[in-house]
Length: 185
Ligand SMILES: CC(C)(COP(=O)(O)OP(=O)(O)OC[C@H]1O[C@@H](n2cnc3c(N)ncnc32)[C@H](O)[C@@H]1OP(=O)(O)O)[C@@H](O)C(=O)NCCC(=O)NCCS
Image (tube, rainbow, N blue to C red; front, side, top):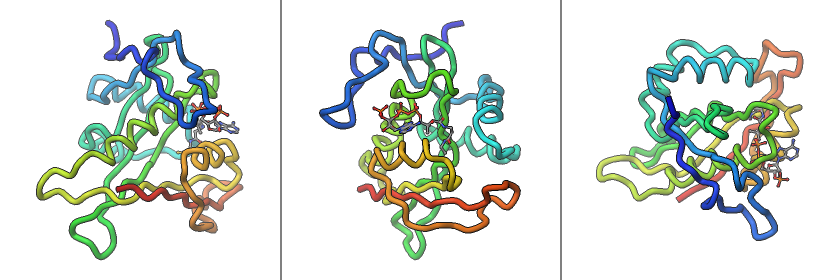
């Protein structure tokens, strides 16, 4: 069965004028996460992240709509992003978006696929607010302090390190994390 990929090869946009899209000529597309491909997402996350996510994580992923996506490269599922909405402290009209996981399988990195997923999340976060719904004002995430690739990736996309969280991952030898944030809207 053909995955629900959209051909983005001619519409890929660059983050800055110096950047050139690297996935032009390939079929790159984002797909919804559904009960039918949840198993693929679990396998991806097992390969990509040292953290084991509880069943509740995957239940929530199915509820978050456009804020969780799988990315296809030439119809092969090679990465995914999963976010969750959280209330913003002290505000009933604002919320934050936490990027829980965003990853691309190693052979498919540096092709702009991570950027495609992040661009989609940013576009969705910046959509006009639906009446009665809180607006998203901040995207944030944690990155293990030795994860240079991810730190470079998020800095490239305008995220700033706002905190060093000591022993954030007590189960790992490198247990510290950096918190990164990007203000939107
Ligand atoms: C971080 C990650 C998602 C980046 O995905 P990607 O598809 O390779 O990223 P892109 O190709 O869109 O890279 C965009 C920019 O980010 C920066 N970047 C990405 N990987 C980098 C690396 N290894 N070293 C330095 N800069 C890097 C570069 O500025 C790059 O632009 P360039 O290729 O034109 O120089 C990927 O490395 C990954 O899946 N890592 C494992 C999972 C993880 O740690 N996720 C983050 C925590 S949620």
